[in-house]
Length: 103
Image (tube, rainbow, N blue to C red; front, top):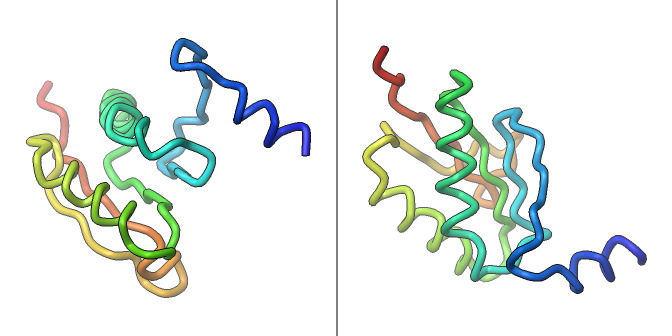
């Protein structure tokens, strides 16, 4: 319960440290934060040489999935993306393939 309260009390200026491991779970973030968070996360992954990323947005009504896909479509660093296989989250997750960073 305390973790949920901490999340609710965050402000826009609060920095959140995320592990950069190729998996981004959006469940604990506000929809208004998704665009910047997704772009920043993918940028850092690419800088670290991680070019295959799983974005977990949940199944729900599909609104967050559509938002994620819309953002990805506009990012030139994204080579491709697709809905995950059932064993990787099904339509509750999106697999993203980034372009290799030019040396």
